[in-house]
Length: 68
Image 1 (tube, rainbow, N blue to C red):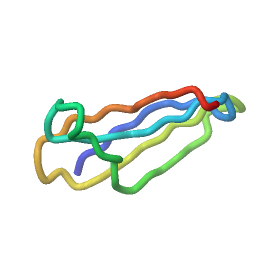
Image 2 (image 1 turned 90 degrees about the vertical axis):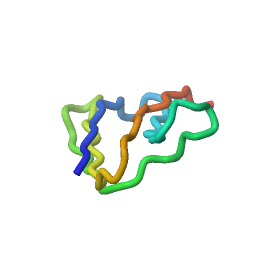
Image 3 (image 1 turned 120 degrees about the vertical axis):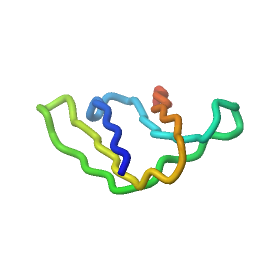
């Protein structure tokens, strides 16, 4: 199993998109899949943990954008 986690701000006008790829090429990134567990840290922050089977080597990133 592979597990990655990140902290995200609640209600901050920001979107977080976890992505995965088997290469670093721009067009190779896809939405991360797997079991998602979200736990509250406080009124402003939460922890996101994504767990998925590890079948091949993977690069992981979280794209952060301002909501418009």
